Length: 109
Image 1 (cartoon, rainbow, N blue to C red):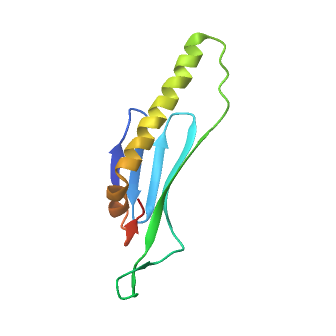
Image 2: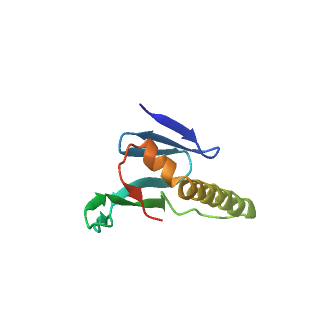
Protein backbone atom coordinates (compact mmCIF):
# COMPACT_ATOMS: atom_id res chain seq x y z
CA UNK A 1 0.00 0.00 0.00
CA UNK A 2 1.28 3.46 -0.89
CA UNK A 3 0.48 6.60 1.04
CA UNK A 4 0.69 9.97 -0.68
CA UNK A 5 0.98 13.28 1.14
CA UNK A 6 0.93 16.72 -0.50
CA UNK A 7 3.20 18.69 1.82
CA UNK A 8 3.43 21.97 -0.08
CA UNK A 9 2.10 23.20 -3.39
CA UNK A 10 5.16 21.75 -5.16
CA UNK A 11 6.40 18.92 -2.92
CA UNK A 12 4.74 15.59 -2.21
CA UNK A 13 5.79 12.41 -0.42
CA UNK A 14 4.98 8.86 -1.45
CA UNK A 15 5.50 6.23 1.24
CA UNK A 16 5.58 2.46 0.85
CA UNK A 17 7.30 -0.36 2.71
CA UNK A 18 10.71 0.98 3.82
CA UNK A 19 10.69 3.53 1.00
CA UNK A 20 10.02 7.26 1.01
CA UNK A 21 10.04 9.07 -2.32
CA UNK A 22 9.88 12.82 -2.79
CA UNK A 23 8.28 14.36 -5.88
CA UNK A 24 8.82 18.03 -6.68
CA UNK A 25 9.00 20.45 -9.57
CA UNK A 26 11.32 22.68 -7.53
CA UNK A 27 14.96 22.73 -8.64
CA UNK A 28 16.14 20.42 -5.82
CA UNK A 29 17.01 16.77 -5.43
CA UNK A 30 15.36 15.86 -2.12
CA UNK A 31 15.73 12.61 -0.20
CA UNK A 32 14.22 11.48 3.08
CA UNK A 33 15.03 8.21 4.79
CA UNK A 34 15.57 6.40 8.05
CA UNK A 35 18.98 4.90 8.72
CA UNK A 36 19.56 2.25 11.36
CA UNK A 37 21.99 3.44 14.01
CA UNK A 38 24.89 1.33 15.19
CA UNK A 39 23.99 1.49 18.89
CA UNK A 40 21.29 -1.07 19.76
CA UNK A 41 18.64 -0.23 22.33
CA UNK A 42 18.79 -2.37 25.46
CA UNK A 43 16.01 -2.90 28.00
CA UNK A 44 16.49 -2.84 31.79
CA UNK A 45 17.78 -6.45 31.79
CA UNK A 46 20.34 -5.75 29.10
CA UNK A 47 18.39 -7.62 26.42
CA UNK A 48 18.16 -6.23 22.90
CA UNK A 49 15.01 -4.10 22.88
CA UNK A 50 14.75 -2.96 19.30
CA UNK A 51 16.40 -1.20 16.42
CA UNK A 52 16.97 2.53 16.51
CA UNK A 53 16.82 4.76 13.47
CA UNK A 54 17.73 8.33 12.71
CA UNK A 55 15.94 10.57 10.24
CA UNK A 56 18.01 11.78 7.31
CA UNK A 57 16.85 14.66 5.13
CA UNK A 58 18.94 15.74 2.16
CA UNK A 59 18.30 18.53 -0.33
CA UNK A 60 20.66 19.66 -3.05
CA UNK A 61 20.00 22.29 -5.70
CA UNK A 62 19.90 20.83 -9.21
CA UNK A 63 21.70 23.89 -10.54
CA UNK A 64 22.93 27.27 -9.38
CA UNK A 65 20.31 29.95 -9.78
CA UNK A 66 21.42 32.98 -11.72
CA UNK A 67 19.76 36.14 -10.53
CA UNK A 68 19.70 39.09 -12.87
CA UNK A 69 16.83 40.94 -11.27
CA UNK A 70 15.10 41.44 -7.96
CA UNK A 71 12.24 39.20 -9.09
CA UNK A 72 14.74 36.38 -9.76
CA UNK A 73 15.91 36.70 -6.15
CA UNK A 74 12.33 36.65 -4.88
CA UNK A 75 11.62 33.56 -6.97
CA UNK A 76 14.68 31.73 -5.55
CA UNK A 77 13.76 32.76 -1.99
CA UNK A 78 10.27 31.35 -2.55
CA UNK A 79 11.76 27.97 -3.49
CA UNK A 80 13.88 27.92 -0.34
CA UNK A 81 10.89 28.92 1.81
CA UNK A 82 8.90 26.02 0.40
CA UNK A 83 11.84 23.68 1.05
CA UNK A 84 11.99 24.96 4.64
CA UNK A 85 8.26 24.27 5.10
CA UNK A 86 8.80 20.74 3.79
CA UNK A 87 11.78 20.22 6.12
CA UNK A 88 9.74 21.30 9.16
CA UNK A 89 6.86 19.03 8.15
CA UNK A 90 9.13 15.98 7.89
CA UNK A 91 10.84 16.70 11.21
CA UNK A 92 7.53 17.29 13.00
CA UNK A 93 5.98 14.13 11.52
CA UNK A 94 8.96 11.78 11.55
CA UNK A 95 7.27 9.25 13.86
CA UNK A 96 4.20 9.07 11.61
CA UNK A 97 6.35 8.73 8.48
CA UNK A 98 8.41 6.03 10.23
CA UNK A 99 5.26 4.06 11.08
CA UNK A 100 3.72 4.54 7.63
CA UNK A 101 6.92 3.17 6.03
CA UNK A 102 6.58 0.02 8.13
CA UNK A 103 9.78 0.27 10.16
CA UNK A 104 9.98 -1.53 13.49
CA UNK A 105 11.91 0.06 16.32
CA UNK A 106 12.17 3.65 17.35
CA UNK A 107 13.27 6.95 15.86
CA UNK A 108 15.88 8.93 17.73
CA UNK A 109 14.82 12.31 19.03
